[in-house]
Image (cartoon, rainbow, N blue to C red; front, top):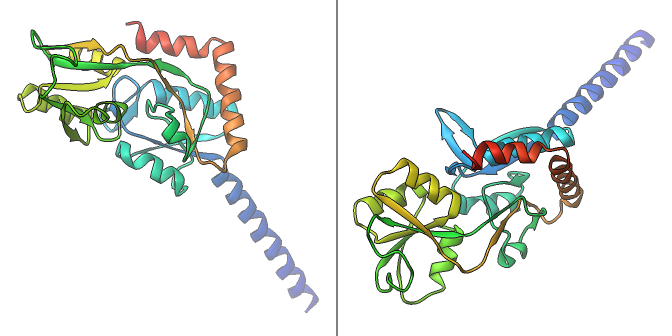
Length: 243
């Protein structure tokens, strides 16, 4: 009996050890939600999600000792997934608006942007000229919030930027409102399109976290600061935005 009891105790200890190891492994993974429809911040290359945000998040993961696992989802589903703790953070060229701050926390900003209008070449290119016309936006993007607050426009919402661009090319909408850098990238990739800035203020991209996750927020903010100080952020910026 003594031998069996000793064997049982050893078995229990081993199981507890394995459980603890498994739990530690699970906690070392940072589940990151994104929407890969936002070139050059996040986009699909074959079966892989790539982009400035993805590279930045991977470098942050290394700084805080966590393996980054990227999950793709619709943009308007990102914050609900974060609030329900299906993901740990969101990085998706997301503007840290006052409305969003009511529901989630944001890190310090990592990029400053503004909104652009995309039109076919030689078409009207400012908001005044586009009054009464149909404007395409991506559901939940800043452009959606921006133009929906104005009553002079008919708004057509799409689930992705690529769908909005196709509608513009097919004359189903007169213009598309999109963040500055993705708008420039789509113009480069699609002949016959032009883009112009809307001068109504700048917006700050930041990483979103659950309201309860204060320690992770502090870790990521510190990692961002370190990446800017050691030159890693500047190298990424040069790679994606100065070509």
